[in-house]
Image: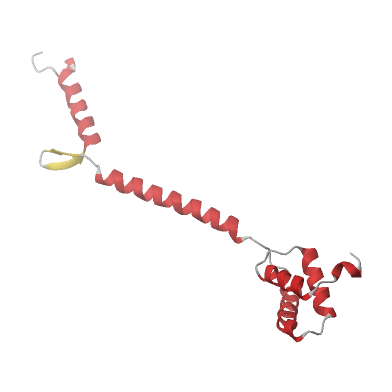
Length: 133
C-alpha cells in the first residue's frame, strides 16, 4: 500500500472507526486507520487514538487475542447442553414409566417379574422335577 492509499477523509475515518470497534475491520483497514490517526491532529479523534494505542500496547504485552473464538465454543456448549437436557429428559421419562409388579408383597420391576415367572414355569415343566415319578 502506498502512502496515498492510507488517506481518509473524516467521514470515512468515522465509519472505519465504528467498524473497528464492532470488530469488523480487516488488517489492511486497521493499518489505514492507524496511519490516518497518526497523520491527523484533529482533537475529535484523540479518544480513538488513545484507545487504539492502549490496545496496541496490550497486544504487545499479552499477544494478539484470537478473534471470534467464542462462536465455535458457544456452538459446542450448546450441543453439549442439548445432549445433557435430552439425556436428563429421557432418564426422567424412563423413571416415570417404570412398571412395577408386586410379588409376595414386594415390588419388583416388570423385567425381573417376567424373568421370575419364566424360570418358575420352566421348573414346573421340567420332567426332572415331576413329583409323580
